[in-house]
View 1 (cartoon, helix red, strand yellow):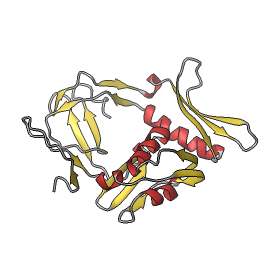
View 2: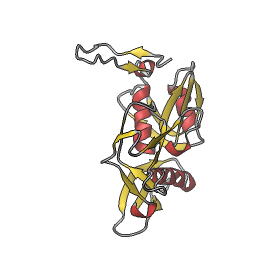
View 3: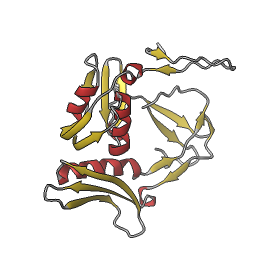
Length: 222
């Protein structure tokens, strides 16, 4: 089985024929009022994900949330990705949302690509170590006394690249630190950045992970 879900209308007349599949169609056909003084990720997902799905997610306190214009479930999931760095995946009737480095093996597959053999083009690929990423992640927490607490993760250099996550309310310093650490882990690592062009095999799907090896530089695997 290659795909189970819905097909978008408007099949092109070009060659090759392109059929767009949309597994999230039911999650685009609803609207929600999203306004909470404080809420956990699990509680929010239980409110916006249809009961036909089993929800799995880490214990994350989202704090105060206000999303206007009655968003659909998909728009809320995109908002969670943009503001918290959380990714979602559907496997059958199981909906999973979590940090990208913490996706469960049952939801993703790992594929191996070897430069010069199973990779058609790797010109845009660059190998970097974690010391090359001079990054600091900042998050502001609005306190009940009107003051603001700044939570930081990463480099403390004056010339570091700042990733600002905006302001949150209704969360503790420890919960804010969990968020900044998670976002930092996405930006700080030893490995490859950029993209590669393959030959269509191994077959890769959204959410999968890829291990790249270089036979000319055996230590550059990641």
